[in-house]
Image 1 (cartoon, one colour):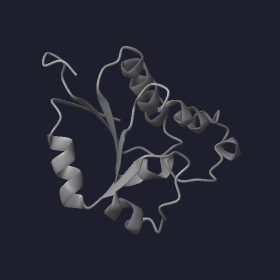
Image 2: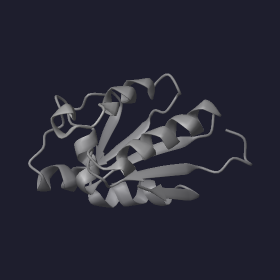
Image 3: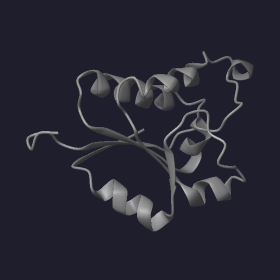
Image 4: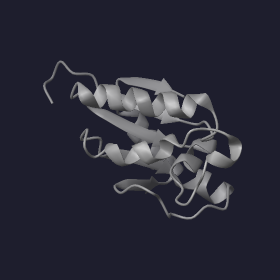
Length: 121
């Protein structure tokens, strides 16, 4: 990364059924295609975007979650999830993508604050 590039974080707090959830993934892939350093953060209902064995067809939404497998192709490797959000929802660490780092609330906040720009979806 050159010193002129800003570190960008995309904070996902929307359920997979929300249009914002797909928009956040689209934004990440766009930034990745321009080799912009990007990190993805998932908290609140957003953690459901990472949980394995989900299907959006039942709620009549195109299943965009499979597109998350393209994150590695775009060199988007910094993916963080809030452990408390998982616990609050009774979810496990079974994710449909690799490289997900589960962080405590404090470490999640610290990692997020290390970025210059935060886009919240």
